[in-house]
Length: 92
Image (cartoon, rainbow, N blue to C red; front, side, top):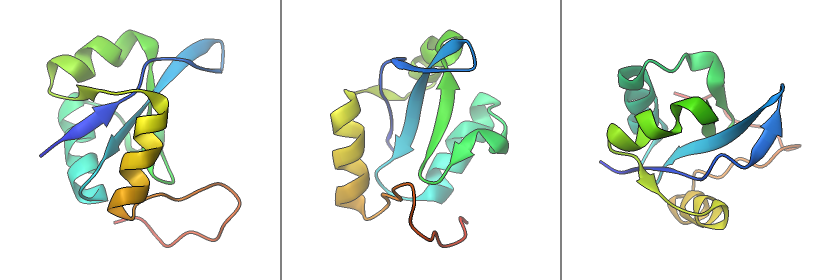
């Protein structure tokens, strides 16, 4: 099981955010996020938004650090990419 996280470089709501993704399945991603204590409401289409202060926690829990472009490449290669503005299937 491998879950990936990019650096906290995305501004929103007065803080910086990272993206947590899986290159295998959403089930794997949801399980990792649950173990980390991340609420399901932080899941957005194909990733979890992780606040900067939780980045180190995710890495300690086993998330692999990658760049933002690598996050997108991993999602596309796994067939899990869900871009904004397109109808989305229900997540499992």
